[in-house]
Image 1 (cartoon, rainbow, N blue to C red):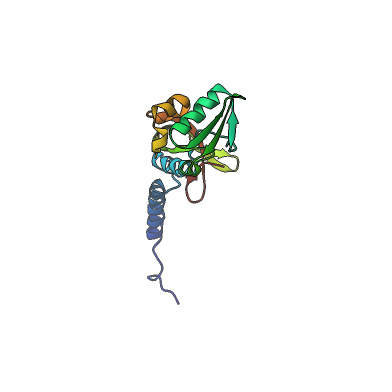
Image 2 (image 1 turned 90 degrees about the horizontal axis):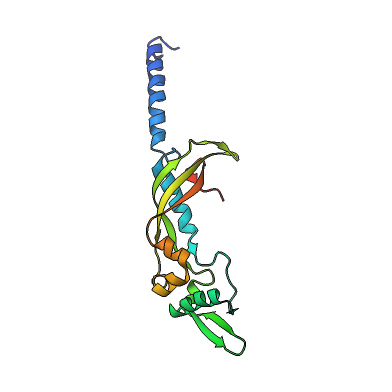
Length: 187
C-alpha cells in the first residue's frame, strides 16, 4: 500500500521534466551528432585519411608506355624521384616505365598525402535529404603527410595540380550526413 508521502509531489515531477528539457539539448551540443564545426571537421578528416590525394585518379597499368610529351614529363619526374625506372626506345619514340622497389609502395596511383581540414567556413542548416539529415559545408584544408618524393621542383612542375594542393591552404565543399553515432561523408 502506497502512502501519499511515497509518491513524488506533482511539482517535483514537473520540475524534473522542466530540468530535463533544458539539460538534454545542452548535452546534445557536445555530442558527436550535433551540427557543429568541430564535428564536421572530425567527420571530414576521418574521411580524408581513408581517401588520399593521388597523382592519378585512374591507376595506370605498369609497365607503362607512352610517347605523349606531357605524360613522358610526368613519368620522368617520377623516375627522377626514384619511384620509376625508365627505358627509352628511341627507334619507336616510346618510353617504358616500371615502378622501383620504393615506387611499388605508392604505385599505381602515387598518392601524395591527404586533406587535413582546418576550418569550416560555412554550412547549411541540417535538413532531411536522401534518407538522412544532411548539411553542405565549405571548408579550408592543407595536405598532410606529403612524402619526400612528391616535394621536388621537378615533381611540382610536372604535376601542377599537386603543386597547388600542397602549396598552402585550399578550399573545398562537401556534403555530410548525420548518422546515429556521428556525421560522415556519404559514400
